[in-house]
Length: 182
Length: 182
Image 1: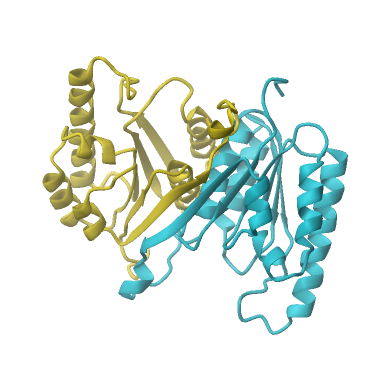
Image 2: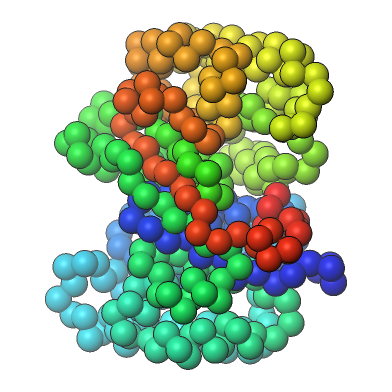
């Protein structure tokens, strides 16, 4: 890792589509640099992001670039989950794991996908997240995605993009389909 | 390809970062479906998107998913290019090639990266692009990225996301760096 580069905190937020996809595109770049990449997926349900996961595993196994470890923190909870307490516990466990990895500098590039939700739901303490990220040792890029990024996170971040919906196929009655939505 | 799915026209526009990255994330999904994917990169300069390109080539070679062909249409022109006429010719040639591929149904998923610029610069005829996309045969998903998507394109598209800049490291004097910007 070049000493001249700056460790960045990147945030993709907003209610439009493409926040996670965009972060996975940047993950490809990080992999290409030969970096050790860690993906923590804080929302998981069914086929969601399986394409990205298989792509990441294939890239990691190729030995062309760096490595990508992928962890699904969630238990498949969705907006209609009836077991929110368990979801909260799993999110908290995920964050504890991420904290350990940051302290150990396990990864050069950490992608915390959909991590705004545990913060906005109050499952993890936003102030603690901010402090851990602000004081992270060494040279660790961190990319966080999800709607409604907390103001403190936006304040700390180096790059913040907001994705807004202009038009969505669901509006026209077109269903989600493989290859596009997952 | 499932008969039940709908061929989509996807557009990522706006002045924020993540438009192309997001489309490359969706490319990973398309690849995972086993689709024949074609990437036409209408802006190319130096190290730009080399990470994504190597990732795409690695995925394509893995034989885990589908194939990804990657073409760089541009000649490295940038906003300061002094040879705009040549750039215009190259963009037009790229579009002619894409038209042939659409007519032949060479790809299941076509990514036309930064393709709004040749339209907004008047190098290719937007009305013709719209007509070719509207009447494209078979089942071809098309994803177009770039700032200032023409209104006719937004009108035709099934999904349009706009990426806006909230904050960018350049504003704080942080330079572009490998693994993040390319």
